[in-house]
Image 1: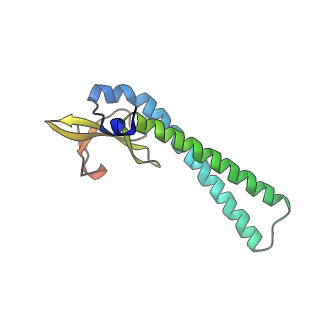
Image 2: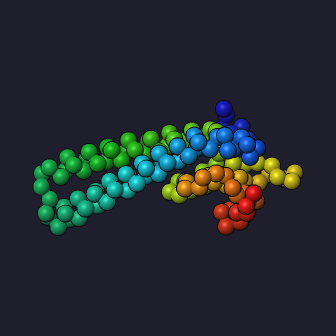
Length: 138
């Protein structure tokens, strides 16, 4: 599907709920990998600090290179999953919280059906310009 078509896709509530299991899976995988990248970044910062203080050993360069390679691999996996979500016509609003919006039609205008990781179902909507703070129950 072309990127433009994906951006403009309008979901019915039923279609969005049917797509939700895959979106949930992908967003959970993204969050899991982001947490792993965060842990690797902390480890690399510890290694940098040890080196700055002159407390490092010869093995730490290899450890740092492995951590960087792993972070790059995880970053690629995050990107691949995010692209899959976007290709479904679902807009990612916040990777860390797993917040996504499905464009939909409500009372003859386009709105967002709003969902984030941890919620069981799609139960909220908001106007295109109000964002998460403007969420209202369906």
